[in-house]
Image (cartoon, rainbow, N blue to C red; front, side, top):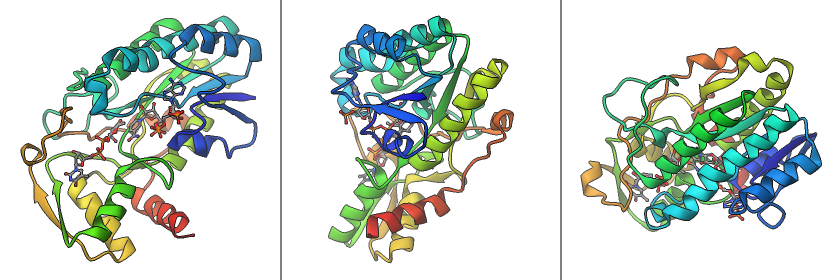
Length: 279
Ligand SMILES: NC(=O)C1=CN([C@@H]2O[C@H](COP(=O)(O)OP(=O)(O)OC[C@H]3O[C@@H](n4cnc5c(N)ncnc54)[C@H](OP(=O)(O)O)[C@@H]3O)[C@@H](O)[C@H]2O)C=CC1
Ligand SMILES: Cc1cn([C@H]2C[C@H](O)[C@@H](COP(=O)(O)OP(=O)(O)O[C@H]3O[C@@H](C)C(=O)[C@@H](O)[C@H]3O)O2)c(=O)[nH]c1=O
């Protein structure tokens, strides 16, 4: 059995559809109690653990550093320690927001980090805690997650695009939109491969292709749904938010070949997501 934390999240919901997976929600495992989560892992003794739970409200995290740190940093570390004690793999999902977004070339996993916001700081703390705690781990950095569930850019665009004739969307932040379903499948594959071959442990990038700006992502959402809303390109400076976002979120995903995985085409995954939203 593979144990998953974050049952109600975008990725957690997709993982819960897979055979051999047991997902826990906040009611059963609250990450603000890191030792409680570690105890659950020890009691259940799974074959591996995937942590899909996180504090993901990027702007709110600026005012809630402590709780974001407990969930994204301390809890991830405590869970990884429990996995080390059981000698099982731990998969931690991380984010492009651990980078500073400088330049325009895709970032490799080993490149220097430099988060611009508190969410990124706490996710980076989680990465470091996991690496220190359990040699059998994968830190899978992904970006711009969307699905038919929860709150995400695709659903925001569908709502706003139906209400307005035009929308101003940031065009100088570029990254890889990634479907929750594709991330879940990758995590499931990775945790099983790690159980077989712990030497594959390390930090990996998994983002949808091709890289695109938020504005062009919005255009594709409107194109695929026939929404006539016009997208106006704006710079980040014209869309002030409490948390600063990196401009360059491009990630080099070449290392995925270790698990025989490739970057998924987000446009095809978007079509599937939109079809599900239609039903
Ligand atoms: N969303 C994105 O664009 C991106 C996400 N990621 C990472 O991917 C992973 C999955 O993200 P995603 O599926 O979008 O997340 P969601 O925001 O959809 O869901 C977050 C999940 O974490 C759970 N959670 C939050 N706080 C606690 C807590 N104290 N105890 C237990 N559970 C808690 C939520 O439970 P509840 O429903 O009860 O609140 C929910 O199940 C995370 O690690 C995230 O950092 C990486 C890049 C981009
Ligand atoms: C709604 C809206 C957003 N935007 C911009 C703001 C921002 O730069 C960008 C995306 O905004 P959102 O708030 O949807 O996305 P955000 O919460 O920043 O998404 C991030 O979430 C965390 C969890 C991650 O780990 C990241 O990979 C990333 O997906 O779109 C506009 O320019 N115009 C708009 O009308």
